[in-house]
Amino acid sequence: MDPGTHFAFGTHPQHGFVASFTATMPAHLAHWFLTREQFEPIPDRPGLYRLTEPDRDGPRRTRQAVRDLRAQGYSVSADMGLDPDAPAAAPRPVRRHAVSDRRARIAQAAAMRSPQRRAAPTTTAPAARAIPPKPTYAPTIHLSARRSR
Image 1 (cartoon, one colour):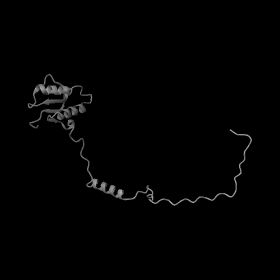
Image 2 (cartoon, helix red, strand yellow):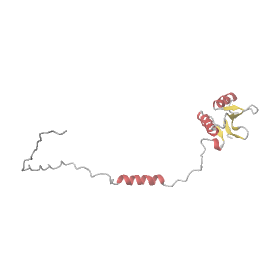
Image 3 (spheres, one colour):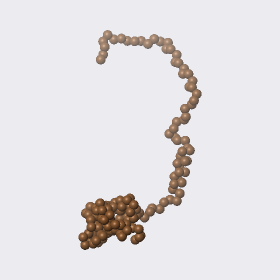
Image 4 (tube, one colour):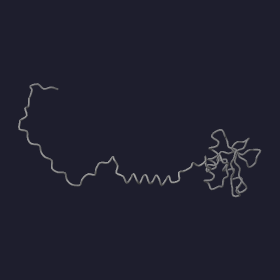
């Protein structure tokens, strides 16, 4: 463990999720932080704390305690499964030029004319419409005596 480490988190076969503090951390301050993170001192093991109610989402709560203490500026050592900064799985292989290939496709699509767009409107005024000639007959209007509703 690194000499500047303040807290250590892990699992214990009898006590479940446990935490302890190192000599670089004052005991009263470590007790205050660990009890706020829902850890309780183990009576027969001085300096060792166990998570209260470990069956109630214990791994997540322990990772959150590690994250909280690191956010406060403390150096924390944790088992691989309890370290929130550790990778959860092996990294997936990445295509070598995936980003540049994608950018090239986007640039090519941007340079092409979209089939969904119409031709650009012309800037000249349209020609005058021809007016149809007047009809040579007079329309017949039939008026009835009764109105229908």
